[in-house]
Length: 225
Image 1 (tube, rainbow, N blue to C red):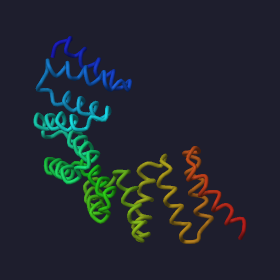
Image 2: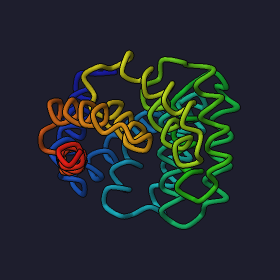
Image 3: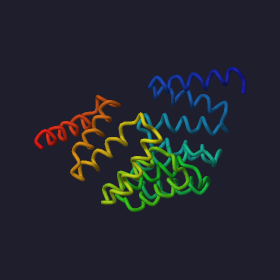
């Protein structure tokens, strides 16, 4: 790659970072006229087209990216998300599954697929994907939180608690694990422990209203006892 080509790509990426998406589209298209076989450039063009609300065009660019590099996890994710926005959920699912087949032990595509399943109302299937992902990558923080939340919704508090406790061990600076443990403690009627967990969440993120409301709720209940 020549210095001019590198500069052309850097300029396009800078426009994208600055949120100048239409200008970035033009810049990536110009770069692709010089480097038409660059899979990353096709992905970046697709991402910028999507940012402009041009999802049909984004789909074509992202398909081209995958044609050039079938191992690119983020290209499968971006393509599936664009298809989902277009209402093509069956096509999106096929893309997710193709990405998983390419790298069955990878976490990125499977994690996004699990979110997709949950958001499209297929909670049981989402749980199964999260469980596979947790088996493959047991220290994946977001999986511990999301799977724990689904267990909590499905009245499986013991499994949920184990995952939230694990999430805290993985990332003690995130308020999410503490908040969910607070919900479990509150359900058990243990407002003292719940208030402690909510207080920790507030300490880590004082701007979140949910944490503040939850703490106030428990603090009021505790003061009435």
